[in-house]
Amino acid sequence: MKRLVLVGAGHAHARVLLDFAHRPMADVEIVLVSPVALAPYSGMVPGWLAGHYTWEECCIDFVSLCRRADAALRPSAAIALDPAQRVLLLADGECVDYDFLSIDIGATLTPPKAERMALLPVRPLSAMQLRWDALLDEIRTLGAGTVYRVAVVGGGVAGVESMLAMHRRFTGLAPQAEFRFTLATQGDELLPGMAAGAVRRLAAHLARRGIEVLHGFSAETVDGVQIVGEDGRTIAADAALWATGAQAYRWPRQAGLQIDERGFIRVDEALRSTSHPNVFAAGDCAGWGKPLPKAGVFAVRMGPVLSHNLRAAINGASLTTYRPQRRYLMLVGTGDEHAVAVRGGLSAEGRWAWRWKQGIDRRFLVRYNRE
Image (cartoon, rainbow, N blue to C red; front, side):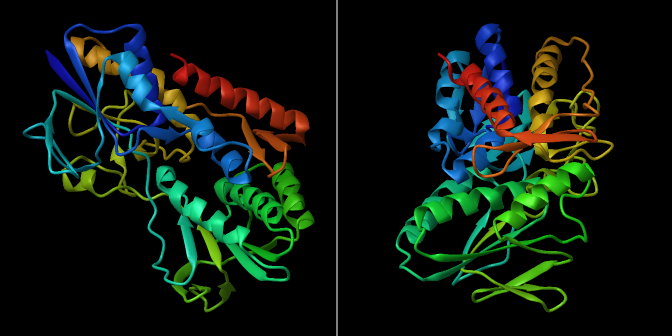
């Protein structure tokens, strides 16, 4: 009997479990290590922020998925690894030994410490729910004429989409209050790397809602209710969403796994660790030869390759190659029931794009949550 341990309830591991549910292996014991049993699908999180979905509606139910795959769920987080002894240490003090290990833990984010400001990092997504619910409770209590300042730090897709979602949710919950929104981006351009036409479309949505965009702002610290930039500029905020670049968890580096220049687990074209052949990694925690955007679309596409290669590794068979897609469709919600569609240099927008996005997202979840 071989033991396969999956660390993290990520999109790629959802596919692995689904495949084992459909095609079980009699000589393999599967263990999923995850501190959460409901894991959000990243594509629907902005819709949740905007109030279009409940938390449960945008999550993969890993309890059900594990049951279908005859896998054991260990409700804890990995904090250390001994690859020589093939042992994983969990936050609850327990150890799990393995024959093969797969890591799909996403990325994290360490914002500055804040005492008077409601500060919400977007990573890890599963940690946002309680903080977001507490913030909504605060918004509901705002009195008429109250000035409430909201900031988003990060001018990428996550930052822009989250800002538009927050605008819709907050103004709908407390129309009597006066909101002031600021989006801060570190570079001189909004949405770097996106097609110019799509950038213009999304910038127009920000402008129509009166959202100030601050360029060249590199956030450094939080002082009271101010975000302080490296150049001394400040942003006043009662609440801030932190959507800056993804950071790697430390324990894979500390375990001696080979990592890339940003600290992510370096993998080969088969999604196997370049230093430990019985360890695999996928999703945001994996470091590809040519860095990939930390986007859910890549994690989803890695899923079938990871699933095949874990089976092949267990059986001593040949592995297949993951080839990142060069172009992919992005459907960026604008807060209301409207979205901007982007593929390569082309873009378009409308309610039809939102319905398209809803259809894709809902079909994805039904596939994994259907008994």
